[in-house]
Length: 351
Length: 247
Ligand SMILES: Cc1ncc(C[n+]2csc(CCOP(=O)(O)OP(=O)(O)O)c2C)c(N)n1
Ligand code: SF4
Image (tube, rainbow over the protein chains, first blue to last red):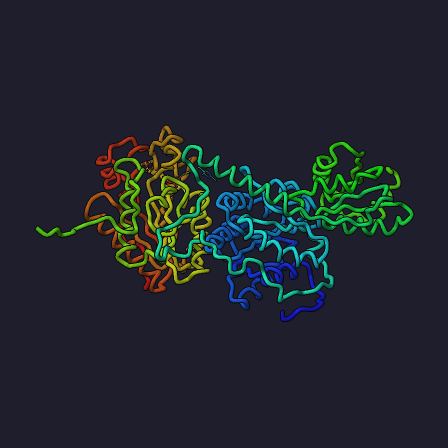
């Protein structure tokens, strides 16, 4: 696709265009619904951009290919849906340990196990508390296709900025739907020419260098973890992102929801114009905007948490509120997607 | 009197002394690779991928760019590196637990895709690093720490001959099984590994060198006895020689 302007596009395709615009030149992925349009469309688009597309033989292989691609300094991505994301946890941890950038997209579906292929937010925990070892990963949760495109692009910049994997946490609803959005093909990636001096590009005129996550000498791993810890702290300080919708001094009830559920919540709010309801939508679910949430809830009577799971982000809301407000939770599980009316009913019964 | 240099440390070998057990052939094979890299003049464009296993520390001993890979994943890490930088010489170096057990899918598919890279497979019939447990290559009746009565093929299956397993895959161009137990076999091993690197440089394609290696520590044998066991017992089941060579 050429130029800028408004396009009518499918969510999974928007991710591909954003990645290519951000300079992603390596993609590996394995088929799984509801994200198949990503590898399919990528298999056509990536070669047009002179990048590498590989259909990996499993998600374990996809993520480890992304690890390899990242060692060269290339911008690289893999995508999957919930069961595939489970297989990727190993590689995500190795990338964080070895300080390798990379972008992952989880187009969530229902679980546990094979679950189903309906939209779900069942992997919130796995996204905000990934892999083994003491590490974190910035996780962005878009709630419309413009954001799918914009945040996928941002994810590559953030990954390079922090030398760490970054995840886009979305679901089958946003992946499969079509919507109009603005393409920004001439947006320039940050750090496009950043010299990745750590990258393995051949030891020309220098000694060999290495990329490792194994640090066996006494104290070295602890020092490495402490160094990483400073990075997590910087991310927490600088990268929290959220949206406030209809939140003002008069707001009496606050809905907290992310991704698709935030969209549905906005629909419910339209139907309940006589109630003073506001929405707090975390965009980064890690780092979670705890302080901003507490501030937004300061004047309200009650907080409603809505998720397409049985209460995972709920933990973070409670951490943020520090017991300052009563919290009511409504969730649909196993791929259930609520109608706005269901949320209205719940609010009316529990307000 | 003028000094004449007959032999010196390859530039591609770092100055760090090997930390492998005395007599372990990991050291020998590391040194051969460094010599070959020097001889081919490719130090500045070689990228190695180290396994999880005793040789995870390979990056300490080679003086060219090396990345670690998760256990068994070295061939796919190498694949991505080679695809992005086709002009580089990329190889993985893997033990038999790494390659033939946890990394079986990775090696089979990398070979089948016919990636233009080199795989050095160190077969020492056990998991050296974790203390000598049974590997897919452990011989029938061989005693290991997880087969204390000897490998029972009825419950643990038969040892896998990786080189023969890869033979029918059309993407694979060169397979040779070698050993490193004496001067002659070490020279042959060097020749095979060099050819595998040359195949990559001349775009022949995927090459796989299986080296019958020893593990004196876990075999509870001294280095001389270990090499004798390689020659007499291991090599009887894992036949030495060229298995495939398509130019
Ligand atoms: C996922 C995972 N499982 C298990 C291990 C533990 N582990 C480390 S090395 C190793 C075996 C290595 O054996 P081999 O590949 O035969 O190499 P050797 O040490 O004999 O050279 C195992 C199982 C690990 N590091 N990661
Ligand atoms: S444990 Fe075995 S394979 Fe590992 S270094 Fe010692 S002898 Fe070599």
